[in-house]
Length: 87
Image (cartoon, rainbow, N blue to C red):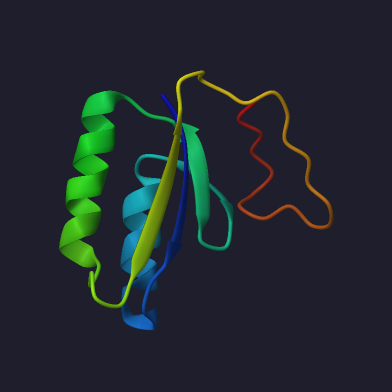
């Protein structure tokens, strides 16, 4: 499945969340990651993030898509997350 993950977490947890997410997805922009992920890795990622975040202060939103990729992505301005193009 293809996912887009966005997060808004406390400063103390930002680096931990980003590091964990980058183990499974591609960093696109501040607090935004995307990529193909297996169902088992998706479950694993959610479980690992649940151990890091404070559910009373933090937010993680994951959009899932049945199709592996959406039709197009356009970036205006500088590209963040490196020059890697996953499409």
